[in-house]
Length: 53
Image 1 (cartoon, rainbow, N blue to C red):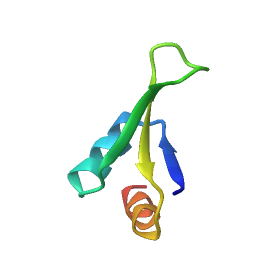
Image 2 (image 1 turned 90 degrees about the horizontal axis):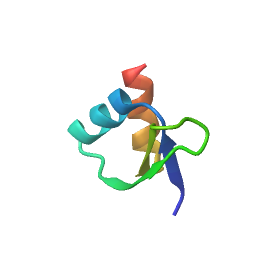
Image 3 (image 1 turned 30 degrees about the vertical axis):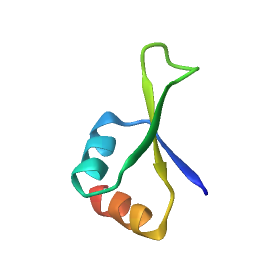
Image 4 (image 1 turned 135 degrees about the vertical axis):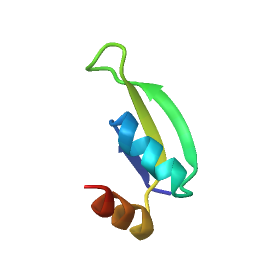
């Protein structure tokens, strides 16, 4: 299973509202205090991200 790393809290919220389940959450090693939201990568997820942008 491919994982999509989302670095934006707003985008993660958008994906969650649109029915994409959060697989995990981890701390960003480069930016102190930031989180990385993990989603299962799919064509539908990529289309939702294009819609968001």
